[in-house]
View: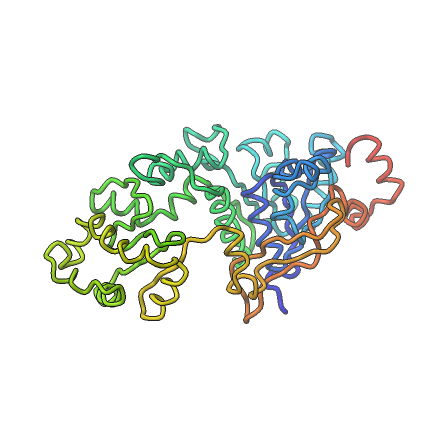
Length: 397
């Protein structure tokens, strides 16, 4: 299988999630991704995750989640010899990705202006919470901070629970995807060479176009509506006998099909449900009517039947449940690595959300132990084993 980014070298200086997630996608697209990690500790994600034993061995689950297929070298960027080594590595690279606070790379004397002077075609991507300029430029930023600042929490949950955090690091992952998209675009430019400024805040806001436009154009301030889709009704989550079911009867023909199938065709004769706008105004009363029937049977049974007649539906699943579904399990979305060094057991990790020519993207190597590729990469630059021993002794690598 041809990988679109085969032959591209990416230096991944990033930590935790947004940057590593960006480079996770670049690796699956075929790029050679070299994690440039701090001596002795590496990516902070190596100490994060739900398994304390793995955290203690610097192979935390949070690290394993998005670092398969990458190489790992260690280097002290504050040491003069470390800077020299890094600059040699930059000469061989196509892309540098970092998610330090703005200004850190400049203080290390390794900012974009320095790097492009030795590699004019370099694509430099800086991922930060709020971008490289502006009044908030020096604010620290974690996923939940961005969720709150972007208004995401204010519209998540309902009247009783909002503001509420989204249940996974949505700001980090959206920021990472935005960076991967921007880098892939820059790689297609001729001549190459650019500085990419990715703001996690703006990346998230960009995905909220419908919500923001309702405010900017229609003058409607976004609100928290729980599991209800305010654009239509009946459209949202409904209680079945076993679990919840999402139903999106957004079109009139779907409304007709739903009420016929539930034996509730008489609802269509009632004035409070006559039009889409009427149903939206009376959505909770309508919800109660539908649930009288839906509660008689399990959500998964209803979903099969309703989808068959053209009413979009789906049971609300847990993460373990969806991973067991053939729709996910049989498409090659998960990748298993056997007896992973530093973990000493098999692991499964996610890949990407797309296929190329019918094939899922994959990488061949598991997440690396810290500094696993020091000899390979530094010897490629002309260093000898004796050099590496001395550099290690001096804390440079």
